[in-house]
Image 1 (cartoon, helix red, strand yellow):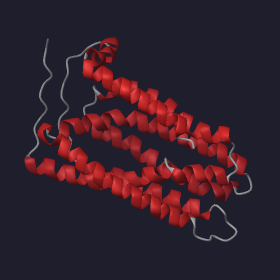
Image 2 (spheres, rainbow, N blue to C red):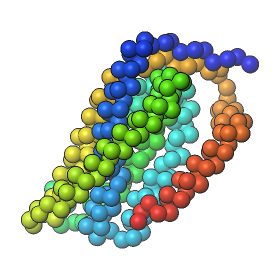
Image 3 (cartoon, rainbow, N blue to C red):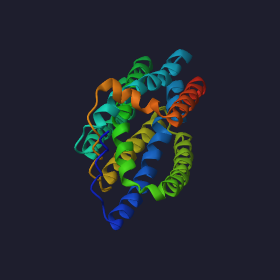
Image 4 (cartoon, rainbow, N blue to C red):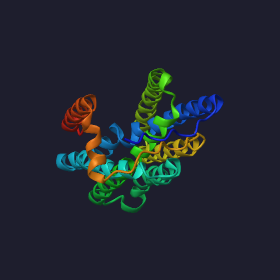
Length: 254
């Protein structure tokens, strides 16, 4: 069986710089996640008078979008540059979160329509996220040296989690500010800041170098889809991640 071709190496300096930039950008991205996919979104829907079914739909559409990861992974294997593909999708995905900040300017007296627009926005955003995720993970898998992966991802997770907690506190503070007669003003500020921080995440991420992709031998689509399940560890990981995602889906909307 033909082995994958090794990717072009980066210098140690390029790798270290790229990993630092990745963490900085990840903090900004996590701040976007804390608002756009966190409690402020549910609070906004509640403020609009959304029903329990509608709030549940805002979570359901995010779960349904996961199916897009399958064709996304197949596409990522064939890309000459994953960074451009990822960035072009994600910059749109982040900037669309300016829409809920602007909705009250057009539909202030029609909260029912704002609910529909918001759910549609969440669905569109989720599709874009899943379209881009495989290319980002493929890029990172080639960038992070194998002997440093545990330390890097552990450190990165610790730092961006702190950034998320800070973002949640700041969002809560802004939502509690007295905005007078405009009951949506706090949400407008929070979503606008989230869109800006999310877009900055993408722009800063462009400074992370991309190694040449590892070239795998060409195989058919069905064989490519079956390949991960040929490994016992991969099968157990897939099963556990599936149950974990299912569990989150039951409680996420609450």
